[in-house]
Image 1 (spheres, rainbow over the protein chains, first blue to last red):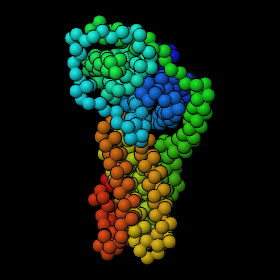
Image 2 (cartoon, rainbow over the protein chains, first blue to last red):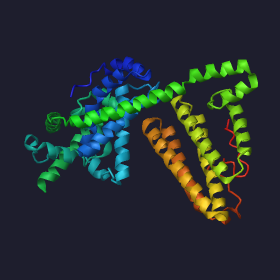
Image 3 (cartoon, rainbow over the protein chains, first blue to last red):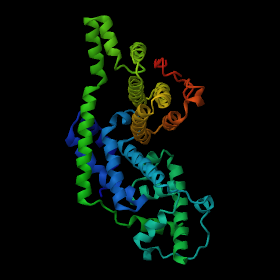
Image 4 (tube, one colour):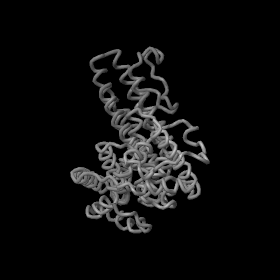
Length: 188
Length: 237
């Protein structure tokens, strides 16, 4: 998966115009540029390949057929695509009747000054992914965007509609929550 | 802090999960079909094309041209009030219950198209009115169904089926729209419209007496025409 370059939004603009004129080649380029990333994003949230495929396809379909709604919204196309994916994920949770919320005290509790050492290098990828899915919606989103999708804090901030400072603070809290969740898993 | 940085690095080291090649191809085929369909619809309903057509029509036959052009006009268009007049005339000519339900469902679809266009143009005030209009039309159709179920249960059930299908289609469209907009006010307005559309089904299921002996009540939004006998779907301004 290629990193999303800082100039991606500039590169997208002429392609978006071409898609609006019905250019399928341009649509294909945008599809190739975003499909894997969106699949990866949704998979990190849901953990099920079939659901992630369906939602990634749904996201790309909406993104490329409703460009009239994207017009003049003042956000980069990449941010818009991620927002659609995020909303689709939330809708999916609602349809499944699954709550994504975790107790507030668990989500916001400060990181302990002296926790027992957690051997993060020895944790399996699946342990990390499962622990991540126990976090709050925003905490999951910030960690996935920053570390799975390798976006900058500024890019994540644009997608989440927050300031860079707020994203950095959220990221710090999310890592703390993840650490606690992993502690809980290893202690059980 | 160092612990969290190590954890962050560990997260970065997780290999990305990639979709299967089959899923990617399937996805592209679906996206391509949707893009093609979308391009066809856009070319048919491009606003510039509509305006040119309207101007030509007006030049040929002013009144008839304006009336024809108003059919596709949007709430922010000067011709929109004329559209309301034309719709009133159409409503007055719908006599049978089937025609009335078809008329209201047609107008509901029109209001939804208008709402989508207004959201795309960031005219939330007009979008909100169009969404209210959508719900009013569904409610009016529900009142016709409710009344017909009393007098002719078989026809009433058939009309109710059409209403339920229309509401399901609109809800699907509204859900899609809700997922695409980012403005909280627009999201709230769409959510409200979905709730009210769902209420129309309940209205159709109520016995007519609960609305005052068969007399239809006002729409849930309080802006409905309030009677299925004299539909007046004039767009709000």
